[in-house]
Length: 112
Image (cartoon, rainbow, N blue to C red; front, side):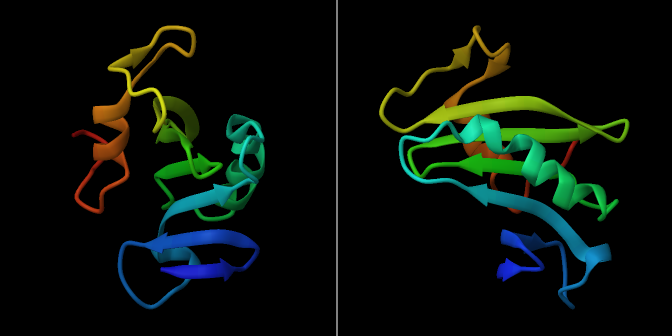
């Protein structure tokens, strides 16, 4: 992992060395109580330059939005609110806590 790596708040790598081709996940963190979902475009701009990046995670520490890459686009995959765990979030048209936690693990793969 790299903290504040090339402007990315937290960069998670599939393997070493820490370089663009090995970047797997971009994590963009915002201040508590700021809408973390508004950070998707910022995280996406970092990932766009790294074609092997498969996930974006945006967070304010309590809420986590996970976006997954499919056909070169990131779509909303799951959402986790630590203060209000749900199995899905129909308003966001995505899955909830269990899938979000799984999508944030190193073992997660796009087809899992």
